[in-house]
Image 1 (tube, rainbow, N blue to C red):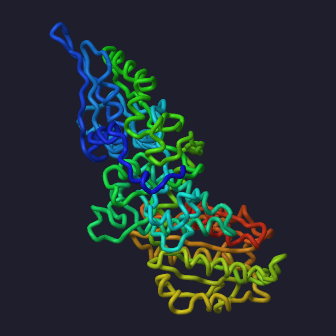
Image 2 (cartoon, rainbow, N blue to C red):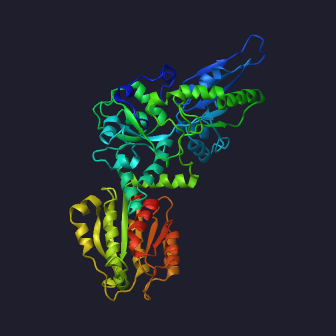
Length: 547
């Protein structure tokens, strides 16, 4: 950030930027701007339809108006990226564009995943806009801005900050911001736990996009008395537009090099005719050349490489230099981030089986604790990360814990909030391993899974979690082959119940856990060092259940 006086902070932005913003009527609206040079001598008029995100549409319109098209025109229509992806995939009968310029390559991937075969998965970037943490100016000043360069971690660690989030499932800003949130906790003692906790904070105020979040700013003219948010991810461009349109509640941009920028790919779709090809090529060349650069600068976007906003960086109070940010990760990485986010926002119904066999008395080097104690500490911490409405039952298992049964109930099925209020954490701290007990894994897993199947509840993520430091040691119980067969017969694709296996210490049998969990669509995780069980447990919850 540059350092400027408060007087300069409130200066009006250049007229060209303010004028271009008049064209931006909102991400959900249609805006049509035609550039036509058709004359009476033309035997056939050719039109090229361009669908674009609201923030890039004004620049595209300016470029299109400058094209020399003797018998053609360019029509620019504004459509929010996710909505455009869905329309391209569904082919709903509306006019199909020849060019699509969304705000992020993520939108191209989404359309392709939805079945829009003629949508490429990438395109030449025509502009960029960093994804920033938009912070209410009063909050930023309280943290020492502008004399101090703020980080996301600075803002999120400050007391009283109320974060919000544009829905990552629909907004590329929210999706890429998840990378920035994960980066802020990478040095935490338990990064996975800290990340889940941070997602919980943001999920409390998840809205459709930055305009809805801006309306929740303290003092916003659109606030309407709703609960305020004071920090949320947004594009730099939308932050600038807000500061022009509503200077009464200014925002400060806080940058992160871990968050990919919006890249505005120029995607040429299928079905372009030879006549349209000449117009599309002319438009692409102009947008990627000097005309495009001039138009982009006037609308408050950066060049494709993130370079400075020309001569206006001082007025706009944004980082004037080119910004080095992370590249957009592969699709599986983004999918995993979104799955974690979905899990955090979904209440669960969870059965947790915890090994209390004699081997859990083994000491964990460097901790002064045994395996039982570090495992129960992990379970207790995890309870605070589940949503309060999540239904949870916890059981201990060994051999012959309850008559002929290898397991017994520690906590009955009840909401996590009720468990926490009734002293569950203190109860868990008193659980001890049985001195001579074996590991009655198979019978315990099967009975618990049958209970989960019988009690399956719609609208929740139904899970069974087993935490063990060994392998099955009950020669009188069900065999592994028979257990796998029984688990297979209990599967219902419409009512999934993933089994999550968490192996504790060097004696945990990863192969065994892999086989059991795979039979249910679940996954196994192992912590060879029991001292790391907390982090492994949280990683498992983040990946499969979202905490």
